[in-house]
Image 1 (cartoon, rainbow, N blue to C red):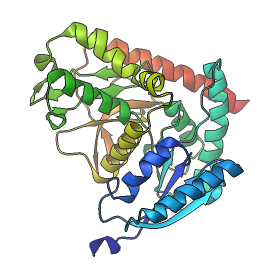
Image 2 (image 1 turned 135 degrees about the vertical axis):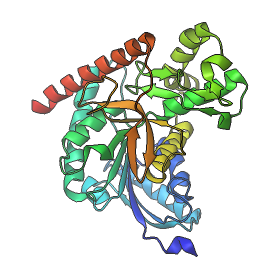
Image 3 (image 1 turned 90 degrees about the vertical axis):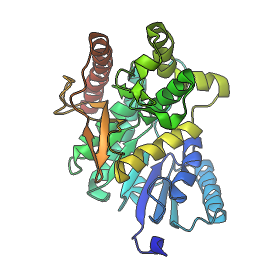
Length: 335
């Protein structure tokens, strides 16, 4: 069997006892994320609280019962140092959730503490080639903090999740155009994983034709599509009384799969990555979502896409929000 010839990779999931973690595990263990021949060892980290750790042991029991041949080991822990040791991939689901009445600064203060500590630990105990995906919100800025606190790890090894927004955009385009999903490509999410994100269909194609020709309806695009994608997470919370989990897990799986195994020629996806050196006029030193292609375990920003004035304004608005979050976070870290 070929799957036994590869050495297992260690994947750490933080906040692993939550509902996204539960939805994500089958993607990892079945080979959907890293390929059908890649064995895995899971390090599941969550709060060092009895109830949470007991829940994790229940998840471990289920993983034993699911008899995935690729799964070579499971470690459940409340200790981040144990969880991060030797990790090849870290998927950070855990973050401090926004409570009613909390200001953004309060949320950033809580998360600065968490992601500073975790970044510093990654810096010392993780594999030096570790790839880190931050999902817990505010994801872009949490990712930036972790990266800043882990100088030994290359900046390009940190990314934040905007693939869920990207997939939402593809899904809504397919529905509107009455097309199948495999006929819709190259939507883009620019900027922050927040309601300022800019879902851009100017370069998207449907059945090989420009999406804006297939859906010739600017009022729908600006008045319905963009707000729908920007506020989709809130709409799901309103309906389910829980945040997106099934779709978030799929997006995480897609993000990691493409980052590690590559994107098809001519196709690009959205990843929030280091903005330093980009050619779209976005300020350096942010974690900003761009269109990227991936090959050989590395992402590259897709250059040379023409940007109209409408797009430029939207891209600037989300950049401004990220700059504000960065400024606030750096003040908190210095305090």
